[in-house]
Amino acid sequence: MNQKTKTQQSGATAVFGSAEMKQSAPAETLPLGMTPPEIAYQIVKDETFPQTQPRLNLATFVTTYMDDYATRLMNEAVGINYIDETEYPRVAVMCGRCINMVANLWHSPEKSEWKTGAVGIGSSEACMLGGVAAWLRWRDRRKAEGKPFDKPNLVMSTAYQVVWEKFCQLWQIEMRTVPITHKNPTLDIDAAIKMCDENTICIVPIAGVTWTGMNDDIEGLNSALEAYNKKTGYDIPIHVDAASGGFILPFLKPDKKWDFRLKCVKSISTSGHKYGLVYPGLGWVVWRDKEYLPKEMSFGVNYLGANITQVGLNFSRPAAQILGQYYNFIRLGYEGYKQIHENSMAIAQYCHDAIGQMHCFCNYSKELENPLFIWSLDSEYDKTAKWTLFDLQDKLMQSGWMVPAYTMPKNIEDMVVMRIVVRQGMSRDMADMLMGDIINAVAELEKLEYPTPSRIACQKQQQQKGKVYTH
Image 1 (cartoon, rainbow, N blue to C red):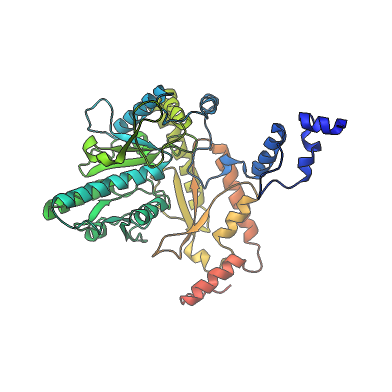
Image 2: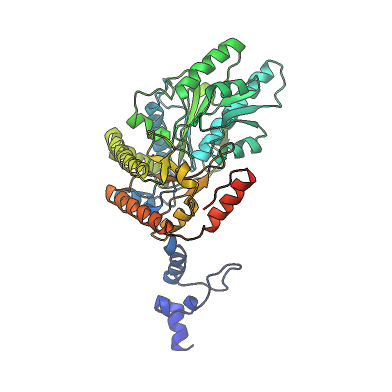
C-alpha cells in the first residue's frame, strides 16, 4: 500500500485535497466505501452554505435564533426519543409542565393537576389532533342519537393553512370555506354560521392568519355560535388555530378574549417553533377538559419496558424541542416573552410604516395585529408599472433577503402581495438595511425600459379579464 493510500484511509488528507472533492456529491446510490467524517461534513455543509442566512429569511414563521444555552441544551438532547418514557421519564414530566403552562396562558378552566393536551411535531400535527377530536366527538354524538355520521363538514375561511386541506382530505371531511374579500379580510362570521348544519364538526377561526397576519374575530364568532347552537340544538364547537397568535396574544393583548374564556372554544393548537421561540419541530394542542379528548385517541404500548400511553399521529419524536421549550419558559418567563414580542411588534410596525410611506406600495391593513404584515402595489401605480412584486422579490434575494411575493386566496387571487414576518433575531438596524434595499431595488426597477416577464404575464391575465393596461 503506497503512502498516499495510507494517508487517505487514515483520514489525514486535507479536506480540499481529497479525491471526494473532485467528484459530485452522491445523488442516486450509496458510495461503495466510507468517507472520512470531516470530508462528509464538508460535502453536506457546502450543499447548505448558499442557503444558510436564516435571519434574513423574512418568509418563514419558524424560529431561526435561540441563545447559546438553549442551542447547547438541544444539541445535547439530539439523540433522546421523547416517547421512551422508560429511559427518559423526566422528559415526559417536562412535557406535561409545558402543557400546563401553555394551557394556563390560554385560561384553561380544567382543575386537574395535569391539563389535557399533547405535544406535536409542529402546529400541523396539533391541528390534526384538534380536528380528529372534534370529528370523533361529533361522530359519537350522532351514533348515540341514531343519526347518520357519513357526511361531516368543517367551516373556516379560505385563508387557511394547508394542513386543514390535508386533514379534510385524509379524514374525508367536507371543507366549507368562507371567502375572504377586500370587504371581509378575515372570517365573515355571518357567512360562516350560514354554512353550518347538523354535520358540522367545528368552526376553525385563526389567530395569526398566515396569508395576512390578521386575526379572525373569535369573540364575535363565539357569540354568534352560542346563539346558533341555542336556536338549533346543535353543539358545534370552536377549534382555534393559533399557530402564530397563541404565543402573541397572551403577552401583547392579555385582555383580549379569544381562548378558553369563550364558551364554545373546546381546543386550541399552536406552534412552539414559531413565536414559542423554539427551533423547528414543535407544536402544542390543548383541550378545554379531558372530556373533549376522545379516549380512542390514546394509544398504549408496553414493548419499551413499561406501559406508555400517547396521543399523537407520530410515535417516536425528538425530545430536544421539548427541552428547548421548557428552557425558554424558565429562562424568559412571562416578562421575557413579552419583551421579545414587543420588540418584534415595534420593528414590524416600523417596517409597516416605512412601506406605507413609499409611493408605489399600499399596506393591506391599517393596523398590525401580529408581528407580520402584507402589502401590494398601489392600484394606480400598478396600472403603469413595468414590474411586479415577484421582480422585487428577485431583487431582494440578490441582497440575501427572502421576502416572499404570492397571490392571495380564491376570490381575490388577482391580488399579488409581499409579506414580512418579524421574529426574534430581527433588529431595527436590520430593518433599516432591508428598507434601504427595498428603496434601491424599486429605483432600479423603475428605470426599466420594457416590462419584465412577470409584468407581461400579468398583462395577459388582465387582458383576458378585460383590464387592459398600457405602458
